[in-house]
Amino acid sequence: MPVDAHLLAAFTLSTVIALVTPGPDMLFVLGCGMRGGARAGLLATAGVITGDALYIVAAAAGLAALLTAFPVVFTVLRIAGAAYLIHLGVQMIRRRKTTPAGDPVAGGMPGRRAFLNGVVSSMANPQTFAFMAAFLPQFVDPAAGPVWLQFAVLGAVLIVLEFLADGTVGVLAGRLGGWLRGREAVRRRMDAATGTLFIGLGATLAIDR
Image (cartoon, rainbow, N blue to C red):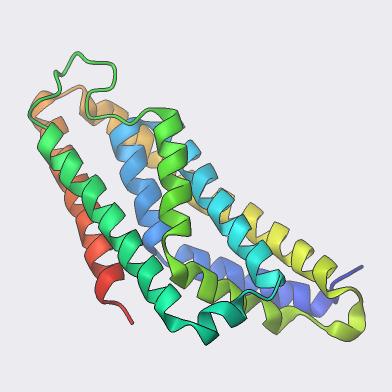
């Protein structure tokens, strides 16, 4: 086994604890599910974990040194991610009064857009990269075998657990949102609430150090 069993158990427990604590990714998936349905929630989750997977590869390749040597890169990514989330929120609020209730995308979010937004949202949050770079190496033992293989195993476990956690949130939000979206007044309030949620996430990301 490429990863020590005790380290793998500790990693799994630590990951579960981290995932059940609501963070930007989970809240993003929640917003997509509420606005676009269960499918959008799942595809948003797939987008988020795709971005996370790329960050895991980057962390395994040692790119954490780049952000350490050039802090401005971290700042630029953080501000760009914040601006993107705020932009999404503003667009949702602006469109809530202009989209007809009978429109198949009324208050919704097409699956492809949900996936791409998930990827961008994840990649635009450099804190995810910082977390991967700091968290994963704690459970890697160079004496146990190839480091890249250990990173791969740990990354796969993290991705599966994240998909189960965030995907569940996305589906449940989609089921509830699907019932609510059929009611025009409620749909508008949902769009306003979801847009406000995204703006809040962007503002938090912008000021968080």
